[in-house]
Length: 323
Image 1 (cartoon, rainbow, N blue to C red):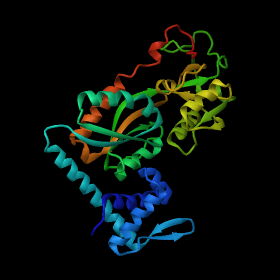
Image 2 (tube, rainbow, N blue to C red; image 1 turned 60 degrees about the vertical axis):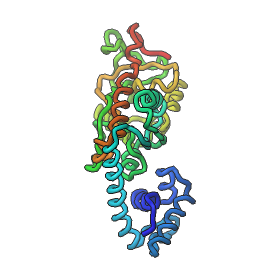
Image 3 (cartoon, one colour; image 1 turned 30 degrees about the vertical axis):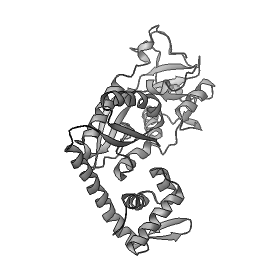
Image 4 (spheres, helix red, strand yellow; image 1 turned 135 degrees about the horizontal axis):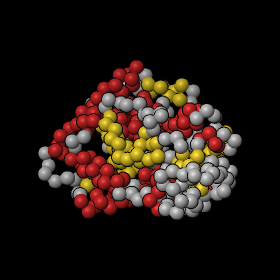
C-alpha cells in the first residue's frame, strides 16, 4: 500500500480523540491538513475509512481495522529508527518534544542550551501542549518524549508501553493576597514561612483549574481530606493568570516554587501543614529507553531540572514571601 506514516498517525489519533479538530491540535496540523491525510489514505486503500455522524466522524469497519494495524506499523517503524540509531557512533538526529507551559518557560531554555553544548548533532523541536495531553501524545507517536506532571493523590494511569521517569518533586504552598492570613505566633515551617492548614481557607474563595484536570482533582482531593469543599470562584488553567488573580485579592490558590517563577507577584506564600506534592516527569515509549538521542536528552533534562534555583532558598528572613 502506498501510504505514509503521517497518514497512518492521523488515523490512529482519530481513534484516540474522536474529532478532526482534536487530531489537528494534537499533531500540529490544520483540520484541513488532517482531512487531506485521511482522504489520501482512503485513496491508497480503496476503502471508505470514515463516515459523518452529525458534526462528528466515526471509523468504518475498514477504518477501525486499519487503525489497529496502523498502530502496530508505527510502533515497528519507531523501533526500527531506534535500532538504526544505536548503530551510529555519534549522537545525532531530531527529537520532537511535548511540554506544558511552565516547563517551556523554566526548563526548556536551559536544557536546549546544554544540548547545543554537549550534543550539537541533536535537533530538538518542541511543542507546547496541555499537560494532561502529553501522555497520549507520546503513546500516539506525535512526539518522541514529553515533560509532564504526576500527582500522588491522582496518579496518571500507567500505560505499559510508556516509561514515566521522575525528574523532581515539588511541594505545594498556599498563595494568598498580601495580609489575608496570619499563621499566628510560633507557627512557621522549616523554610521560615508561616505555616497554615488547608482547612484555614474554608471561608475563602479559590482559584483552581477545571475539576476534570489532574491538577484540579488533586487539589480537590487534598481539600476534602482536610474536611472541606473549596469554594471555587475562578476556574483558571494558566499559572500566570492565577498568580495575577491572587495578587488582585480575589482568591487563594496553591503554588510551587516553579510556578512562582513565572510571574513576579506581590502576594504571601504560606507553608502548608499538609503534604501536597506534584512530580515533574519525563515520558517516553518504553522501547526508546536505550535510543541514544532519547537517553541523551533525558540525561540533559535531569540535569537541568536538578539545577533549577529554589524560591525557598531565597527566603531567609522568617516572613511570608512577598513579591
